[in-house]
Length: 250
Image (cartoon, rainbow, N blue to C red; front, side, top):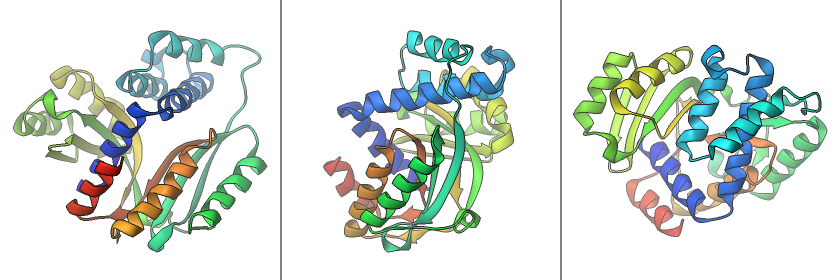
């Protein structure tokens, strides 16, 4: 799991440095709008919306952007989005799950397939790689939030399944159905999280060298550049040396 948390931090730092930040804001706002439209516009009465708002705040999305996204969901002209999951293989045989929200399924499917093909991957059928992942809840805290022992105890008390601390921060994993409850309990102990969201956690991984990771990054960056794509997950594993070199490049 260390490699995956480091990857998240690499992407997080990169996002703060370039135009990808505004694209991230747009995707988080879309999730808020969809969550609010599907349920109650009050985050206290809508667990999915509460998590979406919490994730947006953790990523420093301005309050007015969050409020506009919720208000947009109640308008008659709000777009209708389909949530779709694509599965395939990336460079080196790495399993990749792509989650999308789109108002045009044909356009998105064509773009995703083309992106895989152009970047050394192959889009498969639904279920082709999903069996290699488990749906989990993930809460991230920066390293300065508290020491490892304090975070571990808070995670245990909150009902989390796993907790990993490193120089990159604290990663807490819980059952997907417990995310809202665990996230709230952690917030009472540690303050607001950096991120609280559902993820696909790999149950098996594929080792990649630096060249393989560079190719995988190219595929993931290309997928995430698409406005329809919300999340991309890959079951890679890489050494600390490889991750350090990637971090320098990012």
